[in-house]
Image (tube, rainbow, N blue to C red; front, top):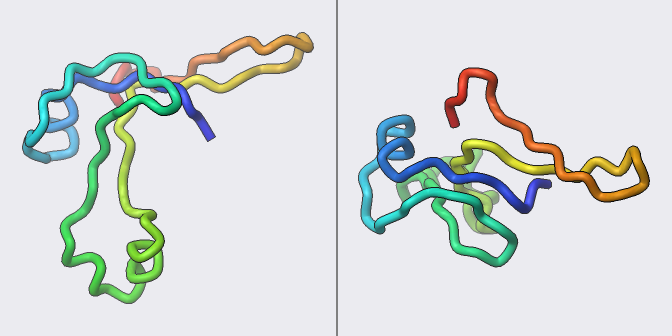
Length: 90
């Protein structure tokens, strides 16, 4: 799982995922143990059978990302590879 990623700007998150802003976010690179934005569904989902268990375990958000990094060890050294959409969208 990716631990380092590039977050979209707050306006892009709001526009692409149709959510409102409650906390300011400027976007940028996010490392492990840093704060980053996430999108969480409304509480009404916790009542639905298919989401009840994941909701109780805390598995209930989307992490918006412009790109993410994964290590490549082919050379024997950690070389970070960046993955992003070809159209540039999050």
